[in-house]
Every structure is written in C-alpha cells, then in structure tokens.
Length: 399
Image (cartoon, rainbow, N blue to C red; front, side):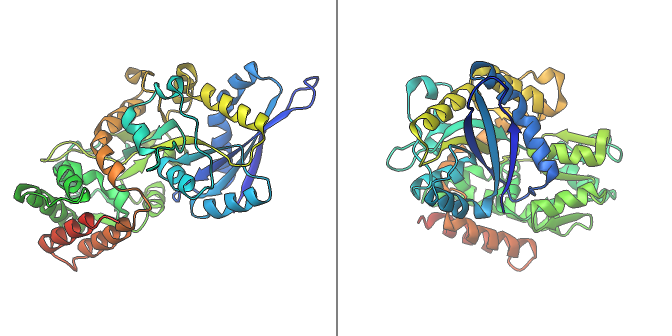
C-alpha cells in the first residue's frame, strides 16, 4: 500500500537536517513499483536540488499512496502523529480531504494566488471559502499512436473511424472522465453544463447530447474499435502492440516511451463536427498536512512557494515534458517539442470542461450513475435517445 523513497540525503557538515515529508497520490492507472519511484525521483530531483541551494540543510522523504487508500492511510498516520507535512494530490482529492478534515486549509495570500487562474482557484475552494491546496502542475489527456504503423494521428473523429476501418486497431475507455473528450468533438458540452446546473437543456442541446451518444454507440459497433473497462487496460494493450491509437495521459508518456521508444507518437485528441475535443485534464496541487510542527509548516509553505515560481515551473516542465505549469505566467516553448505542443493544445481544449468541473467533482454520486449509463449504451442495451433523456435526468438531480 505504501512505498517510501529517500530521495536526497543531507550533506556532511550541515548539522542536523530538516526533513520535509511529502505524500503523493498515485492515480489508478499507475502502479507503485521501481519504475514509478525512479520517475518520481527524476521529476522532483531538479526541483529539490534548486530548493536545497536556498535551504541546504533540508532533506526530503517521499511516500506514495494509492488513490483508493489515500484517505485511510493519511488518517491513520495523522492519528499516530506521523502525517506528511505536504501532499501532492489531484485537485478533487484535495477538496474532498479538506472537507473531511484530513488536510489543513492552505493560507490565502494575494501574492501566492495571483499566479493562478481565478477559475482554477474557485474549483479548489470549499463552500466555506477555504482553499484546499496550491495549484502545482497540470497532467493532460492526449492521443498516443504507434508511429511505426501510422505516419500521423487522425485529426478528426471521422478520420479516426476511417483509420479503424482500414485495419488499424483503436482503443477507447469506458471510464466517463477518460471518455468525455468526445463530448466536445460532438458539440455536447454546453448541453451537459446546462443539465448539471439543474436546468433543462433546449431542444437543440438535447439533440447534441443524442448525437454524442449515437457516435459512442456507433463507434462500439466498429470491428477495430475496442472499449476497455479501464485506462490501464488500454495502455497495456498499446504497449503490447495490439493497439495503434488510444487516448493517453501525459503522466504515462515515460512508461509508453520505454515500451515503444521512438515509435511513440503524441498528438492532440481529434475534433469533430461539433468543435474541439474536451479532455478532462488533471490539476495537481500541493496541500498541507494537519499535524505538522510550526517549523515543518514553514518548510512546507516555503517549498510550495518555491515550486510554483516561474523558473521552477519552467524547469520542471522542460525537464520532464509530461506536465505543464499551473502558474499562468509561465510560457511553454512549444516550437521545440511536439509533445509540449500537443499538451498545450490539450489545456486549451480542456478549458471547455471548467464549468463542469465546478459543478461535478469526481466523487459526486452522479458520476457513478453516468458511468453505468454509458456502459449500457456502449454495449447496446439502451438506445441513444433514451440514454440522452436519462443522462439529463441524472445530471439535473443535484445532490
């Protein structure tokens, strides 16, 4: 359940070291193993080295927590007085843990918050106005393809289906948050936002929802298009060479590159007749533990502020090329990297989902109902018209 890695030791002659304990949430499509530990060490290494130039008498201890066991693990460590000083979490997770009292509110100062988009910050606030964490990085959703099989990725949904008809295997996942990118391509995002806000969509909006669901059901009937139960299953098939194209997460790029080498291609998700794709990108935030000493809390805040300054954000982005900066004033040099260019496009496309992100969080009970509905749709057990009516009813039933 828990794997720990001592990333950096203290230097001789510095005296007793100050230890910063950092807990990291691991997403469901990631597995805690030596590869993940090495990737974590590599991504944080430069950031830690820069921080230690300012605070040489500091060492870091990082613990990785599976997302499904995160709350339990942190609660038990808090009870034992061993809770992390700082946590790296998904934004939705941070909000949930703050509401549950598992983490502490992040201090809201103008100098800190001015670096971030106000709409991003609003998604990290609880109804009482407390801030769950400081925006740190963005993990994007992209299209990954096998360049040894495909010279270029499809840019439209029609090209994607045409490609599959020519014998190139395509993978999609039935997980709602990983499948939602197709809603933008079919022009259904505004309609879904309307329903999620508790209002009845217009006739035209209802038709857009039905067009989206019809495309999903039609895609499932294609011989070379396979819907997988999880993102990790689709990724494993792609690594094994049994898929030529699938929607991937930027965090998976190091794993995929180890499997395919130069054969890995990365591109934006295809658009459709309704507009650009609408990927749900993941915001990673730095959150505070609840039982840190005064000195530990000061170190956690100092490291957080160092991590989001423009130079740190730029170096981490260029060094890893799997994440983008949360600091809105950092410009990413897209001309030098097709991967960064695709990731920046993904963040621009993903702005479509900001409203929905405020209306529905990942642990909202409506998410499970939507997941069940989409699964029955893909398997052909419910027609798109009826599924569209059911989807609106689920979305309007606000908890």
